[in-house]
Image 1: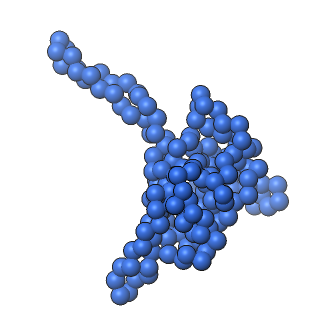
Image 2: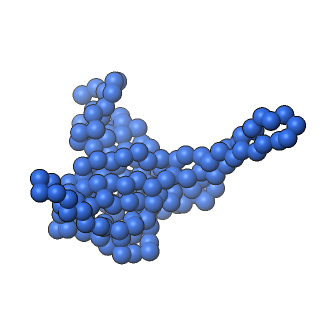
Length: 169
């Protein structure tokens, strides 16, 4: 298959977590990142029944100062924050990935995650676009909803590393 050159469907995208709060090796404190090869060396478990993966990734704070003399706001970039992603899912506590999510919610430790897209890739030798990050899970709440809905949970992951991207090949 050839790589997809146009828009990519979200269908088929997946979220994974590493069990037991295992983090990648070789953290670089100057960049807040782990090398891609360190992420790829870990064993991931898919978190099942995800209904959406909202926006995530690094944003920069904008510092603003106003001076009396020229009234023009001056701006500069400040700190970086990889954000928090709130992932809704059908609540299935027996799902292997959701079981790890529950453990992560009860732990003060950071956990390792990856998100894969459904972009085309070359079988055997390639892989889809993959995002890697480390973060803390804030809980595994229950949302019962209405009579025509499903019991769900929205799990928030506070990302506390840089988000690394491995492009599709």
